[in-house]
Length: 368
Image (cartoon, rainbow, N blue to C red):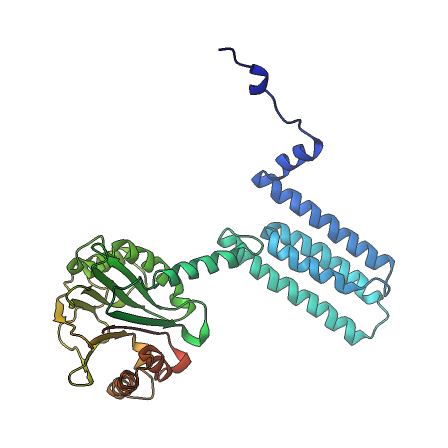
């Protein structure tokens, strides 16, 4: 069968606009093109201000300073700011205002340039320009939050959780990784507290949560904390330790096993006794300190009405109160919520001894 070769070679004509776009969007050339555009804009603004002193607003330089700081490489930014600084030094003295106003104006422009130089250096260090770095951080934060999403539980089980960062910041040193395994018959939960709090621990939380998400369900429950510890040791972080508690719960029978790596002891609600008991006992070392550490597991069974609760140290610790007092306070709030059938997580978080000063995480699951 004959082929119409004219179709194969047909191309869109290269217009002048398309040629320029192809040229300008090439990495290194793009930087120079943007630099040229901002350079022309800076020269035009300064020339206009010098030509019409007092009639053309000098404040129009401010948007150019901001946009340059967002989109120019640092070396180009310095050149633009030198041009603007020299132009302002010549133009501002000619304005029909008082000497103090002129001094304040020059100081404000200078401070804005210094601030945007710092912002520019930070953005290009992570390889981002404009507003993309904020989008990147938002995406990472959302990924961390999604790792704690509760799966759909079978009938007879309810669960709730909360992770709050110190001072309401976007990132927390506490995080949870949750997943249903073995065809949905088991629920695995890891609550982790990375050293530090808020933003200073946020990057380590992001990296560690991704690694633990991959491990969850891929290994036998008894090997989860061992693998997590080995991963953290290999990172060699200066502040690379973390505490963690890991739950493997059989949703058919209520049997569970808990591994603890230096984390506050979980607590169990006994429906028959109508009280919470601290599950003291087996506990391994914190993660990331010692290679080859072992993590024994505690085992038990949840009957109908029983519950388990896991929490981070921000819930019970504070500088001015004893740890046992914080634990008693938490258990009292949780018991009241269970009796009233209120949200246990909300009750526990609201009474946290650290308040807004520390990260707080709580997870509760109950068999009904």
